[in-house]
Length: 172
Image 1 (cartoon, rainbow, N blue to C red):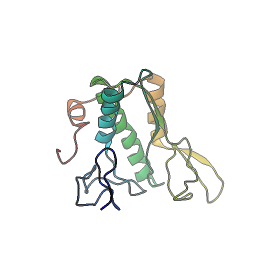
Image 2 (cartoon, rainbow, N blue to C red):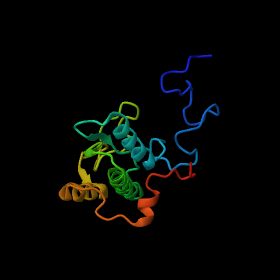
Image 3 (tube, helix red, strand yellow):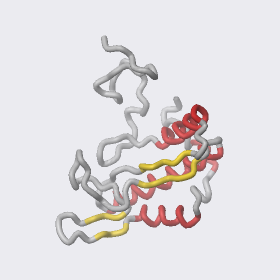
């Protein structure tokens, strides 16, 4: 069979469903509009791994965070919840020792995505691509604005959020 690459993860045609090794994300994870699994704990674990392994002298900057959600009000609320959960994970990782110095959302406005065209909505502002090109603020834009104003993440975090933020839903 194919050689195992550095890092020890064998090649696979499907990283999430290959029975040959443990998946990075539980198969019943919440999915975004693109079908990508939501795994906030993965961000926290990655930040801690990068800090421990590489000890970046300039700290860590998350340069492309975010996910696509439907353009309706339900999707807008899911996007705001996603950002709030990311803030909890960032706070937890920082308390645990990750030197996080920046967090940038992908993207300010809905845009053309190579794989999806204009059908997926990543932006903090919705764009009406079928008509006027009007831009409409989504709830997550306000959430991001508040985080930026405070120059801080997760102003307050409940004990339950704090305890669960780096845990996989299946407990592994």
